Length: 105
Image (cartoon, rainbow, N blue to C red; front, side, top):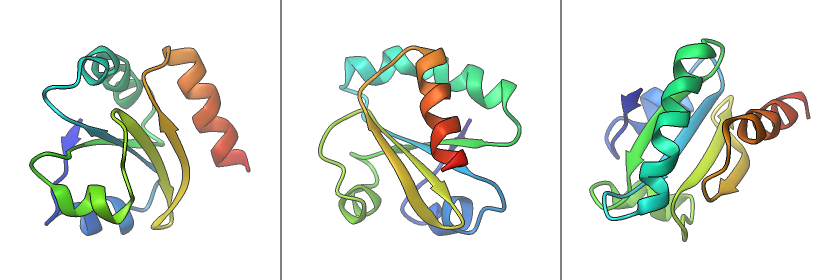
């Protein structure tokens, strides 16, 4: 999984040629650590979706831009636009169902 910063967000997320699932997280957030292995599995199993991480403490500009108020927040982008925001950790199957539904919609 790629780590994205304020400086690389536009290039890696907004200009991506495929959908991007962004994990907004922080080191102090226990649910963020719980969902990390799930996101790593999705990144390995779904080459059609880029999965990236943004540490909101170290990269506050992106978090402010997308009004991230709770962690973890997973935001799905397609063609440079956010199409779905999911707040909180969830099981892999549920997360994939929500992502796939957003991509179909």
